[in-house]
Image (cartoon, rainbow, N blue to C red):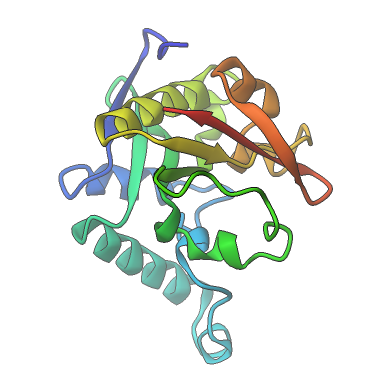
Length: 198
């Protein structure tokens, strides 16, 4: 499953940070998150929600994400069409996404071997104009390549069984199966945990 001929991909870094901003400042379902959700231990502090405007919270997300990038604690693939960032696939090591392990629905899921690295693919974002044209697949393929270059291990993801809503952000089961992922266990009523080796 190689990226389509119209797409190129780049790793998120300080050099590509401006492209990340360009994508995440476009109007869309993700414009208020900047892919910070899973990086946090839990919900925002109550005082922050009450005392900051939506714009201020968004800007704080950008600052938090940029700080993670500078510290090498945030990883992802930017997908481009004709030089324009149109898609995103977030991945990282288990410890970079503490919110997943704290989720009640995730507890009890079989662990991987003690000596195996566990990587996670958590989120996809695709510009509205480019959906259903293989952008997420290009991001997933590039993310798997990056994980292999970083030493590989077990890769875990959380696609949804729904056709709308979360599918925009978590990816579809069929996309992951085509990439060789196997279903491990249901996660709640509308998601699955899938894994494969990289």
